[in-house]
Length: 463
Ligand SMILES: [Zn+2]
View (cartoon, rainbow, N blue to C red):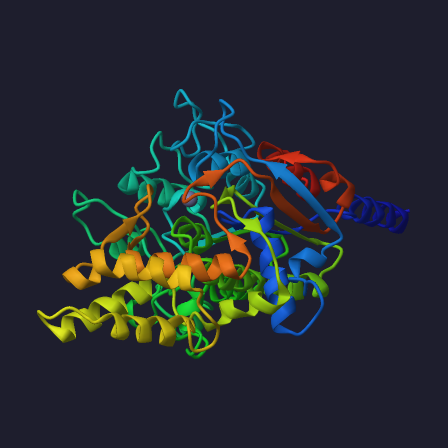
């Protein structure tokens, strides 16, 4: 009799957990609309000598769909409103995090996961209290309330936080890392710290030090793994940390590729393409985990909104020219400034600037530059560098303050490579949704970003 009861009970538990996503990964490419993904695959294809595209790992997932992203009044969203919609399942106004337009408190899927006993990890390659990660623990009417977001982060008490840094205002007088330590976090500043500390840690805050600072993917092409911390480091660390005691309860991990948006604001196509590939590398780690736990793992990859509104006009012969851009526009601006400083009072000559652009982007040396394009760049040179000025180009979000000649040259090269930005802001274009995991039919209808909360709760059986 006892054995029958036990058998029935075991069977009941087995049926209960069948098709349940015990391990959930949610990846958000900030500012990564459908065309950004599409173009990255064309670039990969061209670089691998293939006709058409070479797929990113996440685009091979069995479900591929689209989502709308508008904020609560139907306007183009920012990352705070969209992050909130994804995290909390409810729309809000731009700038608001984890609260409604009137300030009413929402609950995030990460908070629900924690309430259901799951381990929770929130990570991004921008600051941990930036808009997208902040939407999973923050409850602020303004995304700019950095100090309050730190308090929200510690109040939610999640198991793993990772980011390039922590934003704080001048009013924040205490040492933020000490505050986190006092809240029970083991603070890791690089991979060695993590390896040394994770076994005995109960909660982890992973924020790299200066020597291991997060860099744009395009700017760390020649670096060794771990030299500049990236989202792959965060994802693999979080998995290792959660699985050290088998993680019977399961986990929820949100990982943001936040730099994609910043580079798209600056219309830095070559940089943004590398960031999408970098996001795909982080997804690869989750996918390898999925292969070990295929029945219990769900991976969702989506974006909070499109940035830059790129049009894609691919020519396989020219798209490969994008590979010659060695650094992000921001880094190139810094390098150009150094050159100007070295030269002293006398401005750089056109020839010197042209050889800089040739060295940094392959212009003239690797591919032809049309007469018109050269004329246009010379005009910018005359009104800026010839007067010993950089002529800063700034986007409305303030992420980029780039030298005009570098910014315009990079846009020009990208256009000739078939990637044409229509704006430096966000658009309402569809974002892609890729899914692998239990109950794929749940993700098989066109979505709105406010659907994710319920969909994740359903596949993971959160109450
Ligand atoms: Zn943005």
